[in-house]
Image 1 (cartoon, rainbow over the protein chains, first blue to last red):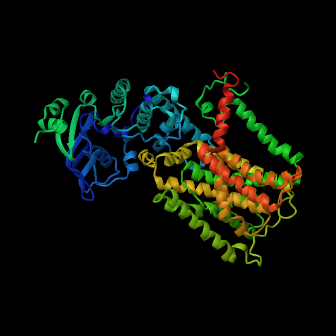
Image 2: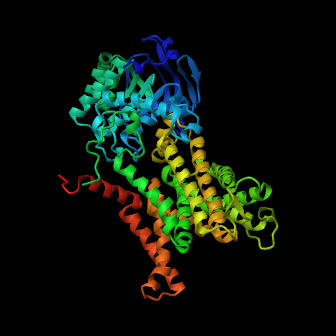
Image 3: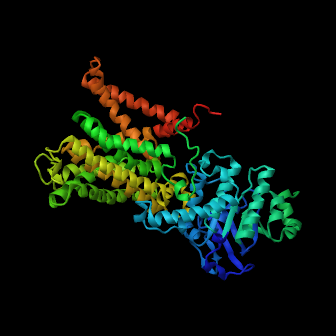
Length: 270
Length: 359
């Protein structure tokens, strides 16, 4: 897995240091406050879970982090750089990748092509060489193909390499989507409900891939998930949102005992 | 039985990534090329070459252009006819200003002008999608068509208002103008089409093609992969218009041999090519050829073939039957096989692989 080494400029943040900090972020859609004054941080090398009941603003939070939504207030500091507005493709080039709650694969393309798209940012051959598909263009293509094959091996999807992803069952699509995000060699991987709608076996597989990703590539992972068993087992720290506000933050054990969290999930007698 | 890849092991990634990974496909494409380049020019009559083959190749090229933007990038364009016209006029102006430069070069260069215009009219594609974009490109169609008629500079102020194709030669043989034989024009056109198909296939199989398809299938995710949407869409529009422009120049110079732009490059032409792309197969290069062949050959069969076997058919009736036929074909394909003839071809190949023992 030598080819998977992160490029040198990413060495400056040591594991355990803050990779991404969200400070007092407020996001409004007209009169609706999706996120209210939320702050938390993500440390390098950890699995950070974001949980909360439906409509708590978890996905909005991810959208803020990777630049789809621009918060009205607050700051986001990524790798020591503070920014308020950002375009998604810039976030991508800075090493933030993500998967979607409802699979957002390129349905007409094969598994291989889907994952190859994840390498787009790393490909630089000028247009001219693509006219011939020879020389530098082909060399680059083969080099990235090797990398993609490593991911395919890693995720155990060799058999569906050339199948259009639209034809794949849901569980495999989720896996391909993870592969596509991994192909970007992200520093920070945002997973939006990676296990939604899966059976137990598929969930276990996915957990294994997430843990392996962290171990092998040192990727920092932010995870939204509803399966509490998964969240408590996988994550190092958990942040809990409810109605757009942060109600708890800490290790899984701390969060489990937090009365506000219990109330949010189980409801309170009024 | 004969079409299968058993025993053909790919040992390198480049072998696996080849456009035709199966030996039988490579032989097949070789045979088709040999037929097109040797057998048809020798045995084909002038009538066959000039009424069947030349229009077929021109339309294939135009359909390829439209397919790049509509089939691969998912942006509907109704300006194809106009972009073809830009190519034709650009070629006309260039060859009148610089008559010494070879016409083939000008035919290819005229695509650049059309690409620039296409990219300009592709600008709205960042903000609008689907039908609304189609209407925006319709504006290109009407505006450019107006220019072709109202700007006399384009047709060199001649009285007829039409493009008059001058005689140009290649190695002393006339390839455009009244003295060029259908066979030479056909061979020149074939060369251009083969070259451009090869280039299109190269581009679409690589990073740029994947970018286009990613934008088509899920633009939000594409942006997240670091693809900037505007450059990607504009590249698609420019490349598409390049192909359309070259097709337009070929149409005027190698097929019509001159004529009025308002007839050749009107909205009907845009729709005609859109139908070819839909019937042939969106997002498939070979589909362009299928679509062009079908929509081009059917009218000819109705017009000349039926009278030949003793079914008298007046010109107008043939025309009407043609409309009926095309209309029902489109409905049929939209319902039964939205991926067109190309998908049927793929299914056939898939079946052939296991035939005669599918289990």
